[in-house]
Image (cartoon, rainbow, N blue to C red; front, side, top):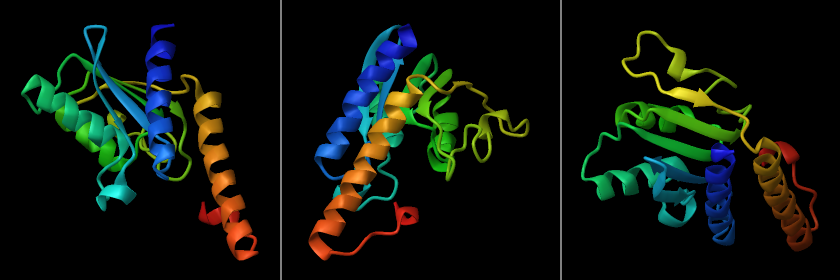
Length: 164
């Protein structure tokens, strides 16, 4: 129940990304039952390949707490984190990572690899996947379908669905 409440807030952040034309992924950082920071995808608008929702939320949380380490914090994100974001989460020392939809192309919490289960790495957060997975996945599918329709309307071409 608690996870679903925070995931709903991450979904709200994902809508912010969509409104800016970014892939709709949202994240929230929670400490002691309180949302302390939020983030959403912004790599296109910021011209920053690292501006994923998770990174934006981690940066905000670190600034608020005055520490790059975030022990006792949990991160909720609508899409399974990639290797970059998972690495940042390990460096931040998050206690828990909760994601919605799996990412079969770049997921680093079980879909492609699970970095949090690598014994040689020095930090291992608890990972929970599949929270509101259908809702999170539908948001992404709807976004890419709308994008393909827009390309088709403006060009008359049928876009390759594998490019989404």
